[in-house]
Image (cartoon, rainbow, N blue to C red; front, side):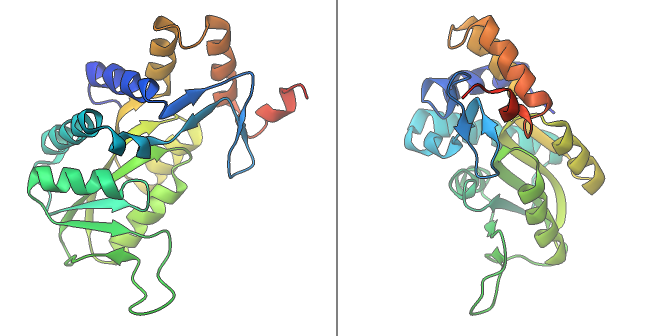
Length: 217
């Protein structure tokens, strides 16, 4: 769910400007999942641009307070959302924890790093939503640690149907600063891509795991 249309367009524009999102329908990227993709997103680049990271920090902070009031703790999903999560926690004057993909193999074998008490209200910060699986594993780890997870905010979502189903099934509210539809509309308007390339990008999202079959070698 997009919280604010102006924010969605501004976020998409900033991500395109710094190549945090790259669109290349003619030469697809290979994801770790094995999918061929005409889009690649690396929101960690935003941390290298002070004005942009501050914009994202401020928008997240406003969104969290508007939706949830002030939670007790901000949680970032490792590794991509640790940096921006800390900035949001600092802006709101709140404690911060982060969630590993899996528990450590040594020491206290923590999966949630930082001080978290049972019953505390937590909002989770994420950088990117694809299928939602890794993000929801972080939510599950927080719940197992006794947290009351109010919801999740993310910079960008591909808007896959499977992600929407996964969040609905997990009963986790997701709000994003921008999403795929806003990105494509802006990319055409600003001439990052043609309307024909926009159609290719739309087709990919319908069935990303099978899209590579249609690519000519």
